[in-house]
Length: 363
Ligand SMILES: Cc1ncc(C[n+]2csc(CCOP(=O)(O)OP(=O)(O)O)c2C)c(N)n1
Image 1 (cartoon, rainbow, N blue to C red):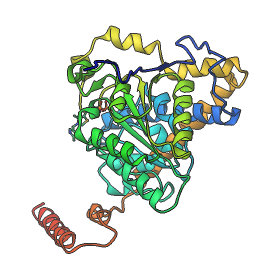
Image 2: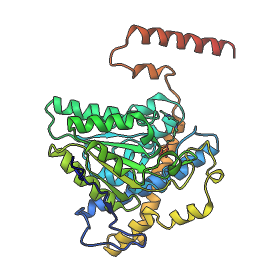
Image 3: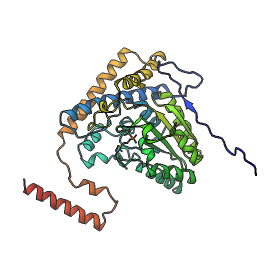
Image 4: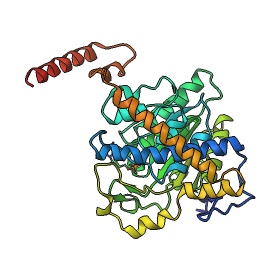
């Protein structure tokens, strides 16, 4: 009886722009100047929007919301690697990506104030709404990719985001398995931000990397420095190109850090050390990228000043627009369950509106 190695596996890691903004020219991806500037714009917009939205929540002007700060490279760089005909399937921590896809900040504010209208984005029809049920969005991603091939859309790719905690969900494994079995064009981006609310990664999995989980499904994977825009972009673009060429799905583990709270409902100082947060602050994706752009003579202090002013004005006007809105439909969530209203939904809507009337009558 022979005993022999029948397969060997390895996991690659990619970093191109290091923590000091030094670039490895041999690995530098091809990105046009316009696209580099677009990427920077949205990363800064996302960070400023995050900062403003948290203030609004603290003032009681917005409901609970998640913070993306620190993860901007991990979110925006993959989004740059797809086009409008591709699908963007996210969870709830991809603000910059959603803005890049053409969703307005007003929609985000509506959503976090509980208005279903915030999930309806006709300006960005191939961007799925926020999914809070962990990893469930990956099943839709695989379904969309399968359907696009059935419909003869040979060019379409699906970009799907998921958190580190969500990889412990069955849906994650089911999605990866069938994506691989059907060889569908999905690029899974795992935003490994180190925590699932207060649970650190090492307490919920014993795997050294998340990238290695793809090996079980015979799917290409890589771990990248998720605070390095160039590495995240390069890995995603290669995966998107493979998917478009009919070579099936990939998994990218983007190692990053959530700099703020999980959502405005928790206090991260209760479960992590200041020193850890300070260590990650030194790896900030925006600082690093700005250095790179400055060195390439694409950026300077006066451009930054103009960008800061433009972004502040854009955010202010979105807040004004959002706060001036008053005409909401309380039963809007029933509109978006099925294309055609079923009898059950009809009954539930009637019951909901009746209860609402009762609440109003009772003051
Ligand atoms: C199926 C499911 N179980 C539990 C929750 C509650 N929950 C919301 S966020 C979260 C942690 C998710 O962590 P991770 O996947 O790492 O993503 P992150 O929030 O860090 O971006 C949990 C457990 C949920 N939304 N869905």
